[in-house]
Amino acid sequence: MNAAIGSSIAQQKIGFCLVPEFSSLAFISAVEPLRLANRIANKTLYAWECYSIDGEPAMSSADIEFSVQGKISEMPALPIVFTCGGINIQKHTSPAIISTLRRIASHGSDLGAICTGSHILAKAGLLNDCRCTIHWENLSGFQEDFPELDITSELFEIDRNRYTCAGGTAALDMMLSLISTENGHELALAVADQLIYHRIREGSERQRMELRARLGISHPKLLAAIACMEDNLEEPLSCSDLAIQVGLSTRQLERLFQKYLEYSPTRYYLGLRLDRARYLLTQTSLPIIEVALACGFVSASHFSKCHREHFGRTPSEERRVRH
Image (tube, rainbow, N blue to C red; front, side, top):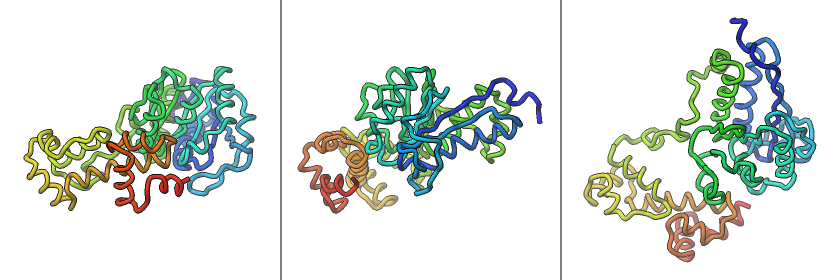
């Protein structure tokens, strides 16, 4: 091995706040590159400590326990601290986490977020004037809750001393970028090779699969129509407007949807809007009327009727069941 690998910097100590129901995949994707960097460099370039709300082992969304060093409120001001989130992040955004993050930020710590941890940093006012990102499923709700922030749909964002990523394997790419910056690209490539990770992704890469792969269809006009729907959930386009956008007649568009998806364009579009609404109901505190308007429904009563017909329960019932 090249002796120069990992020789450029003193040990970096990193803290992880493990919020209840955090993503174990995203957390492990962040820690494993650090462990391998130490192994490849044959010295301790990185050390890490984990903390939970109550100092007890932290339980992930997969019901896996992870040992911790202590309570989040007792976390020292480490050079970098990442908040690791997962599902039900609003429920777990506690005063203890917010006060701790504000305290360590005031002491000069760099701050980062993994998966939905960005929500907690935003709630604490620690993402102001910084580009940030979050998992694609949470993106619309995050934008609704924090319209003043510079939120992107990138894989990860590093803006000065703020690090945010979409979760999942995006945490791996973010850490490889950190390793590359601090200890050289050669070490980052060696870590990726150990992980059988064939290509280190840039932060600017898209989070979601291409529509073609996600839906298993390849018709360019149909894909263009669905992309147009996904981009216009708050102010839905009419079927005729969609057809014009993709260069088809309304009848041609209807035939395409029926052939490949066995839905009418209107029905498919409604499903997309209701799926987003269901997420906003269960993962944000937006009033039901605001959820309705954000998903293109003109009234709460119309939204409630459509939601009940599609999911078998009203928006109010959905919110109660999921909480």
